[in-house]
Length: 181
Image 1 (cartoon, rainbow, N blue to C red):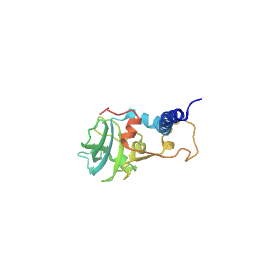
Image 2: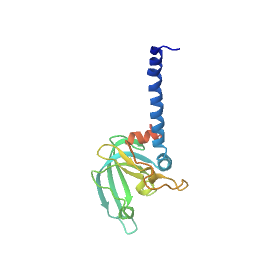
Image 3: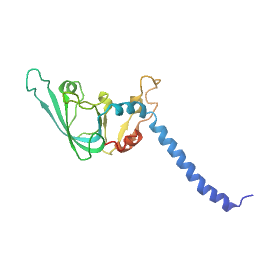
Image 4: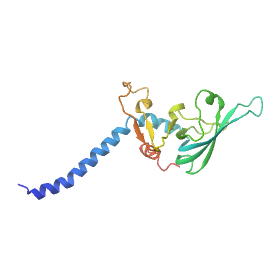
């Protein structure tokens, strides 16, 4: 029969390992509902970053056959794809999208998934509002997993999956986007 000190030693070594395995499983399960829908957005994005809106301005068409655009300037905080941290990124978006409700406000901090530039030099967020995640004052994004369910996934009762609070860097890591700058 093992001595008491042997049992304590085994408990001291095994329990922390089991605890870490349980924590890792919990982290994987909490990420699982969010990843499938966001992963497809990330695959279509040319630019992925966390940044702050510095300015927004309407650019009048230069000719009668030109389209009106909005020029939005961001300061990149966390660079994930297509940008560098600290970079001032200026994008142009069709004013029609702006009028449809997808508006940026100076000072707003967002995690953005933007399409690559079109032939006209325009872009917009992948999936509309799904490609725009608000970063709170705590530096975390509230991701509602129900919002990113794919059409093939069975519907859930609203609120079945609790929101996940995650930093932009953690989200990039869970999406396996690290180091793609």
